[in-house]
Image (cartoon, rainbow, N blue to C red; front, side, top):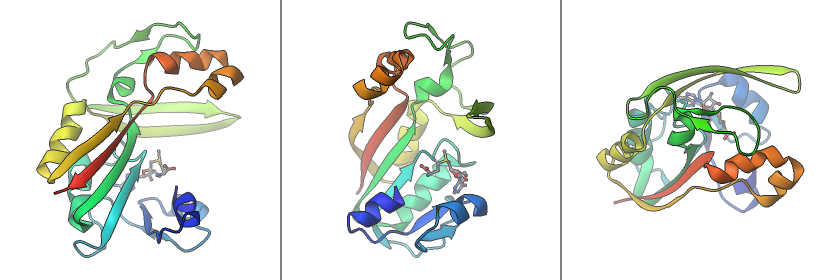
Length: 183
Ligand SMILES: C[S@@+](CC[C@H](N)C(=O)[O-])C[C@H]1O[C@@H](n2cnc3c(N)ncnc32)[C@H](O)[C@@H]1O
C-alpha cells in the first residue's frame, strides 16, 4: 500500500507496531514503529489516513480510531479495510465453492481470535479481535468520523477462474472497505 501510494505521488508516513514487519517492508524510509493507539505525530498532521487490514488486529480498536482522527485535519479522510465482521464471526465448513458458512458461537459480542494458518510451508499465528459492525461504527462516531461509503467486495472473476473454490468468497465478503470523513 505504501509503495503504491508513493508511486502515485503521495508523500507517505507508514506505521506498524512490529519492528520486524517495518524492517522487511521499508525500502524507502517511510516507516515508523509505533502503536496505532498512541501515534507520535502532532494533531492535524495528515490529510489522509489508511488503516489497511489492521483495525481488527490492534489491541484497542476504539483508541486506534480516536488517535487516527486526532492526527487527521478537519475534512481529512480515513480509508479502512478490515476483515469483514461476518467473516470473523464464523468459518466455511470446507473449501468447496458451495460449503456452508457456520457461525457456531455468536456475532454480537467482541471475540478474541487466535488461529494458525499454513501456506507454502510457512506457519503463521494470528491474534486478532472479532468485532460486530456496530462496534466499528460506534468507534467512528465517537471520533467524529462520518461514513461516506462502504463496500463489500466479492472475490474477482480471475481469482475464481484460477481456483473455483474461491467462489465461496463471491457468496460472502472477505473484507469490508469504508471511507470516512473527519467532520
Ligand atoms: C494483517 S497485518 C497488515 C499489515 C499491513 N498493514 C498490510 O496491509 O499489509 C496487521 C498488522 O497490524 C500490526 N499491528 C497490530 N497491533 C498494532 C498496533 N497496536 N499498532 C500498530 N500496528 C499494529 C501488526 O504488526 C501487523 O503488521
